[in-house]
Image 1 (cartoon, one colour):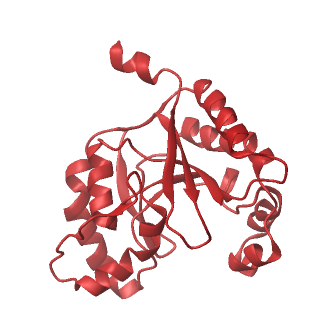
Image 2: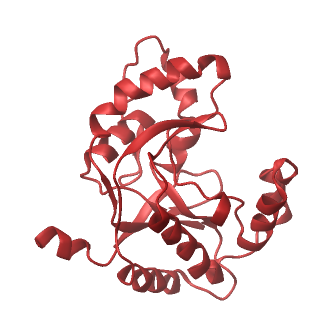
Image 3: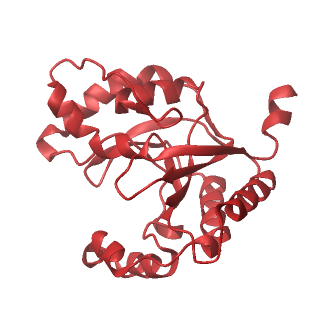
Length: 235
């Protein structure tokens, strides 16, 4: 079993519903969602395009997948996550936009947000005591030879290369896209997602995702509201 601490919108959120429709899977239910009919894109090409992010579900990584360290049980992780979430304030992203990051497409904030980056930093540090060190095989799978010195150091110390200065909040929509196809895929994504990208996105929970075995689909174990979420809705 591997665990990950992500952000994902609530199951009723329009952005979540549209993104799950795009990916072809809802991580709340664990069930496949009928793939949309995309003009100028064959069904098998679309399935391949979304294969990798479909397994993970619609999310933004805060603490990358990890095995529990020996001697620690799931209930201890859950207790710490509930306590941590209750001490943190929600963070609002004024607007998301579609961007190409190293060859794949994702949703990212339209502007840097220091409080969002700080939340991610705090999650990485607070839950590192629960993380078992990655095996040599797991490290090799990430191709450390392609990383910067700082990213390799992050991988060794924190189990994930893209933390702190290398962190960028993103919600993955595709696997790698050949450069020649990127304008076409960006246009398709814009048409599909634009109606739900006008509203701000509130980071109002931390989601615990689980992977039963390596390569299995990730599913949402539980959502943990950040402090002030309920007060804000009833104010």
